[in-house]
Structures are given as C-alpha cells and as structure tokens.
Image (tube, rainbow, N blue to C red; front, side):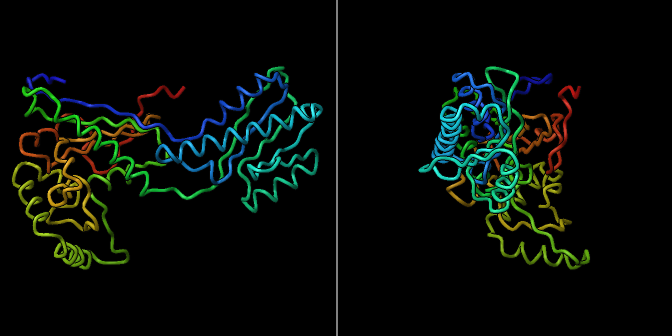
Length: 327
C-alpha cells in the first residue's frame, strides 16, 4: 500500500472463522436428502455451544454434531408419523438412541434437560409446509469462554504470518509490515486481542488516585529492567502518545500485570516473532469494531512511529464502526 507522500507499507491479511459447528447445514442437507416435511429448531448443549479452538477440537465437535443429526433423521425414518406432530428429540449419548417426546411430555422433558444441562443437542420439531423440510432459529446454552485459548490461537495466527516477513524481497527489508486480522470469532473480544499484544492491565478498585499511583510504581518495580529500558527507548523515539494511551506513561493509573507479545519480544525469545510486525489491525468480520495496534517495539528497520497517524483509531480499546447497511 502506498500513501500520498510516497511511504509504503506491506499488509498481510488473515481471517479466522467463528469456530461454530455447521449443524444448521447438516440438518438442512439431511432433511432435503430424505424429503422429510418437518421443521426443526436445534438447541445445542454446552459442548457444542463453545467455540472450537484448533483443528482437533473442531473435528471432535463436527463429528458430534453429525452424529446428533444422523440420530434425529433416523428417529423420523423409524416413525414417519412424527413429522405430523410437535415435540422434541433429546440427544444425550452417542452410544444410545435419542429420546423422543411429543405433546405435553415434550415441554416437561425440555424443562428437565435445560435444568440439568445434560444433553448434547435437542431438536424441537413440528410439521413443515415445505415438503423438503425447514430449519428454524436455534439456541446455544451457557458455557465457559476459553479466553486464554482464544488469545493463544490469535497469537499463533499472527506468528505464522510474521514468519512470512523473512521471505520478502530485499527491497522491502525496511518497509513496515502490518497484519490485517479479520475475526469472525464472536467470543474473541478487543480486550483479549489488546491484552495479548499490548499486555494485561490491573485496576485497584476502591482506591484514591494517590493509592493507584503507588500501586503502579510497585508493579513497575517488579518489571525486568530490559522491558523498562525498551519502554523508555520507545518513549524517546516518537511513541510517547501511544505509550501514554497504553498506560505505559508516567501518569498511568493501570499497571501492567503481564507484558503483551509486543513488549515481551524484547526479553523473551518465545515472542521474538512479534518484532517482525510493525502493527496489527483487527477488524470484526460482523462489522462491529476496528482495533489498531501499531508496534512501538518492532525491530529498528520496521519501527515506524508515523503509523500512529495513518487514520486508524488510536485508542487501546476498539472503535465501533458502522460500515454495513443497517437496513
């Protein structure tokens, strides 16, 4: 990308899917394949509701979802009159047939299953006017969000992209290298990506400003000298506005509990890859927010303070964007 003043940046883009199982697609394909005139609304249990992180977890969830849908279709095949009734099919065990309830018993069975959270998936059903079957909106159950796992997967994606920096032509050895990360993951929030790259911050609740300043100084005293020096160097080299915004400045009231990948790269070989990145732009795939995190600690030839002023939001928190038509 070339700016009007002739400066250039290189942009490597990557997209992360939402990690959700494709159970809707499985249901539609199964209903249409068997020409089942039934309307189905899936309700996923905790195991299928959580976002899959990594290939193995995603594969296990997909297999579980396919088993559940196959069991539901088998129930309709074995008892064709079910397609003319209203009820619920509760799938609890891959080794056993699902439980089928119709009429008033369906509501009682659903109340029990929802209370106990002991199901893999439930499927409400009713007759459909479409002879090929139809799908309705479903639900996911409450589940723990694996924030550490999501943050680790986020950093893994960036590390893979950073590795491509070394393969670029020599004429771009000093061209800033950015990564544009389009996230379709609804559970990966700006606080996760911001903390992963810039560090996790703390807050001393119920305190005065003076007490918070003292707490900040105590936390700073525990920081390795090499990281303190890296911050001071960046502060003197044009990054002061950004470092103040990130709570690295002298007036910060939120100390860092752990350094993010950008700063950790100055002291930890495991994060050395981050020095090859001049900045990361995170955009919500749903069009909800944009988060711009330039890297004050990139290696010297890729360190570009002017990236603070290229028109992207400069706050540590994400900025809401409204680029999609709301109609």
